[in-house]
Image (cartoon, rainbow, N blue to C red; front, side):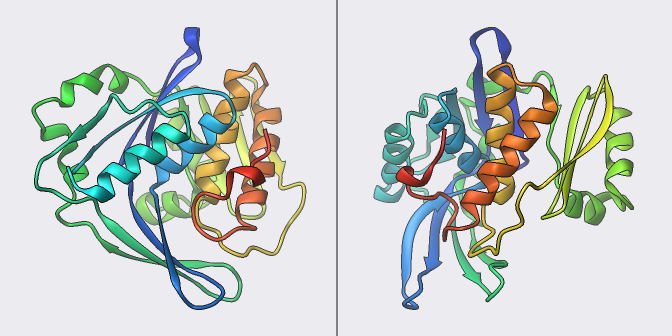
Length: 249
């Protein structure tokens, strides 16, 4: 599933669309623990924790694991009325393994996940209104370089601006984020380079903090600084979603 976020500015609402899967992450004792995650789902969780009204749109099965995902979303304050349930299907699963530097490797089992067919399901038009426009693009430079051959973050900005996107923030790992809008372009550095334990969901949490700040009235540069801060917290924890008590608002 692609990464898509749509905002209704008047009511400060966000609809996140994508896939949420069962997550298995190895702990310090070598054992695996289960949770759930997925790029736009992780963003939805951190948005909800920041006080933004957010709904999640995906497709799940009718199994206990899917029930658990819905229960987690509800507990986090995420609206679940846009989650479609497909009888007899199971959500995808992924396993995370991290090296000594906190870099992660994923292994996926998701070929039969119903989210892969979200826009082919009978009720998919319940979320069609969320697909009408893109207001803000939050790409990761490494991904854009691999997919499109961009040579630097500036090239990513120029390519996306050609599509008429007015606000773009290109994430570039532990160095800077390039913010581009009607006022120009500016690099926002990471305020503190930390030794990561697990870099899973670093970009997802960045997206959430950025959008939450913008929806709260902050300018893009201040929003990028806040986003760096949350991402720096998240990479100090294992797994995609850090414990609630560790989240800063």
